[in-house]
Length: 290
Image 1 (spheres, one colour):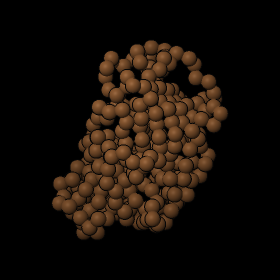
Image 2: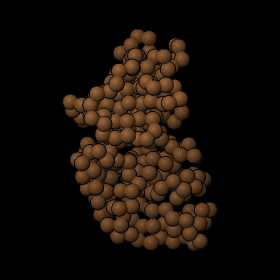
Image 3: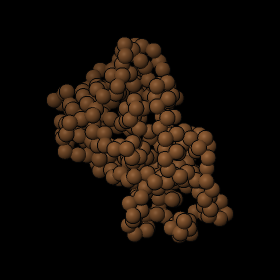
Image 4: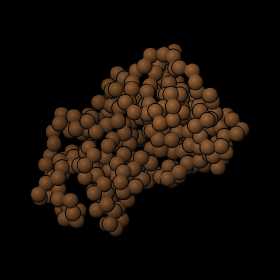
């Protein structure tokens, strides 16, 4: 337990600080692998206990239909997290500046066990923070799995739930020299004139989450089939399929414009193919021979 933590996801350093001496911080599960020594943060988030009984003011810009809603007021973005299982009041409220570089998180004290350490950025807030930060000209998160092969090349496998991302990750995990970055969520960023894939803590069924990165050298759109084959995809179709698998702030016109430009750069930079595959070891051998 601690009163401050630093996380690094996709080379984005988040400094998480307590503003309340009675609050202690912790992280659990895959997020532990993304803890780093304290460093200059790209994003600073301060957390404290609060009594969250007042209605949030401002314009509602998005409703997830689940745990959270997003409001905007005076240039700030306000996330409200609530569950009917615990009552009418939010259990957490988070406020961020327009660049998503500075934020405050308040937890409703009555909804948390006494003396328990907490992770104020508990999913989905950590992912929402990163998604919005990336959309400010910094990168994109994709519903995909990715791996670095024994030669260090990065392969990105894109598809919706059920397309075979977890199966693909498990099959490649058995191969010597292969590093799985994630079986469900990958961040792509342009750095130093190259496109890089980064692992994230938001994994799928295989629970594979690695803080490493690899250069993006190939994109595959997954599709189950009766035989293994690669079918090249055109620029427009590839952009559309990547866009459909992107995690985006649809309420941000600037974010959408930047993301579309980045996706187009991806498909013009690296080969994109549809991988029609049989979900067994034969697809790994097939791809090794391509």
